[in-house]
Length: 243
Image 1 (cartoon, rainbow, N blue to C red):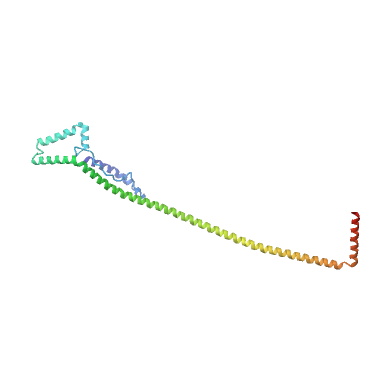
Image 2 (image 1 turned 180 degrees about the vertical axis):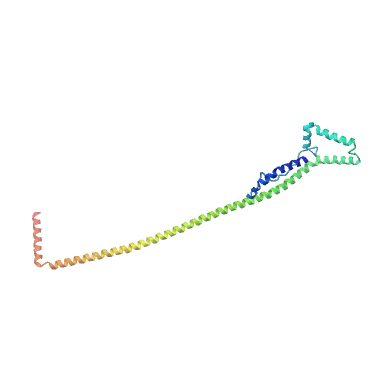
């Protein structure tokens, strides 16, 4: 157990300088999972004889072989008992009987108790993780809602732009309609002026022709009229003979 604590403290000292280097990552709001991993529930190390750490046996194994730790334990107990360093009084036998009772209880009841305790630990850990997952799901839903709101805001901008274009089209249509009205009114006035000029010209021509005809008629004497009539008859007779 002491060796494991020493290893963990040494690992913590090795990770300490790196935490100062990557402290800036906290400003970005993202957890540094590499240098600051999330805590994991520790598992007990492997033991022998119910309480002796496996590391002690490995320490003896490289020097004395497989039977070294057991020989050392039996020799140490024999030495303590033979030198009466450990006195076996009446309480010793009481402790020995209690040890046997505890050992038997561990063999019979320990698996069920360990399974129950593991189940309780897993339940507590599941509740903690469930709270974390609920928080993550809530934040993810909030992010999705925010993105949807941004998308809707962009849609509102597009709608406003479309409305502006629609208003511009309506203004353009009104402008062209009024321009056509102006064109038609101007055309009507120009057509009126043209028709007026034509009527005035026709009236002037009619009066001019009537005046000329009247004056010519007045200028022809009865003798001239008779001569012209005789000449016309002669021309018709000549034409009739030729035919």
